[in-house]
Image 1 (cartoon, rainbow, N blue to C red):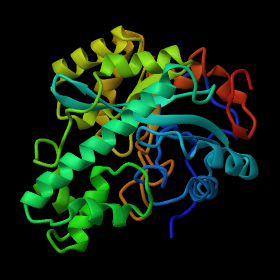
Image 2 (spheres, rainbow, N blue to C red):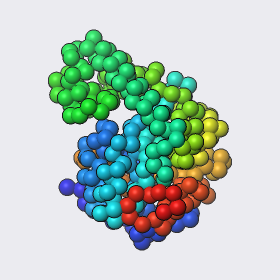
Image 3 (cartoon, rainbow, N blue to C red):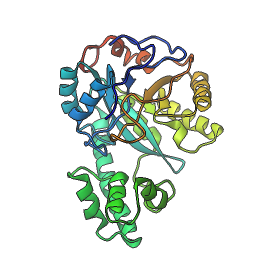
Image 4 (cartoon, rainbow, N blue to C red):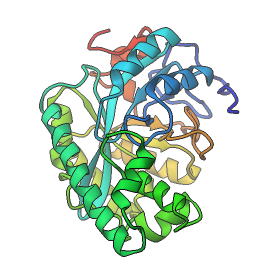
Length: 317
């Protein structure tokens, strides 16, 4: 059973600081998933877990969908948590699969409506390609078996196929499924259907949201290439980067912070939580170092997050 999150030197509820100080933990998690995409908990269950762990501010950022936001908003009101509507967009940059978190204080609107429909179609086509490839590698009826693992009619993702591979005994565990079949560069890693990162960022910004470059330390990029990614992202209108995503090396975090400061980018944070029992839990992430990079809640579109009441965040709430 997960223990409640009791961070050292934590700030009172609904009181977020204007700067990041050293050795400070925050009751904020702006990157998590539910059963609306590939998470294990329903939006309501996720919100309740966040409350149990002491979070005061959260965002539900399911992959390429905002279907769970309304349910999460009701639960957040009941739990006394401020919820920022959001989603996580799959994109391409120089042939690499890059994720962009869209924080949408005004909810789903504008070009993002059509963009998410485009993403849904892309996910459906991508799942068909993944299934075809896995069938050639020893998983018959891969699409049906992944659908059974999903337990709903939402678009399938790689985790659904990973669970199918484990259930059929093709691999021993989730890690083995990604290492052999679904991870970056493997046959089941299909990127061709995603939009360019600049297009996805444009959808978010034009729809009143804040685009956040997700977990930049996980793409296996050199420091120089990571900087080029940030430059492309920023040129398209992106204004924030996840300075901390789950657990990461402190030296790498400090170096990433320097790259943000060099570009005047806001710093965000998130656990990338998917399911209980994994290495991540809501609010569980490395300490953010002292840095001149401003917290994302200082962004003009999110500044009211600092003192927001419980429930779903809206413009000026």
